Image: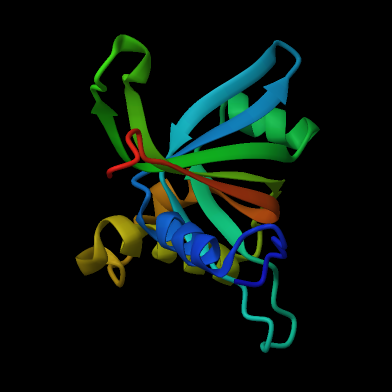
Length: 169
């Protein structure tokens, strides 16, 4: 993982990357003139390759159409992205012991609109491959593609949290 996260243990780093690949969707938060705005989105994780020339840092790939979040990103590209997996309600021995077990990653970064056609298509294919691997090589509908905006969120900071609800678990 090329993003520098010095406070994560090696096991947390491994679990963070695993969750970034497995989480079903991401909650992406932006801020516009009306205030904070959070929306769930499909995404793919693109780990950076520090050995490749011209490589970028780790990033999350997102696609969307025009709307409130894209207007907000045009004004301020900063985002906060929350991802979670393995969420399960656990009833404890007493009401105050009830709660959720989960694994979560919180990412902060900047969303960059991908305008280069080849980079945009590669990012879209990565997203499609995550959700529908059999369709990853299928041609895109040109009309839909023309209206699709693709962003790369360059990961600037990241944290990982795992919460088992009961010590025996």
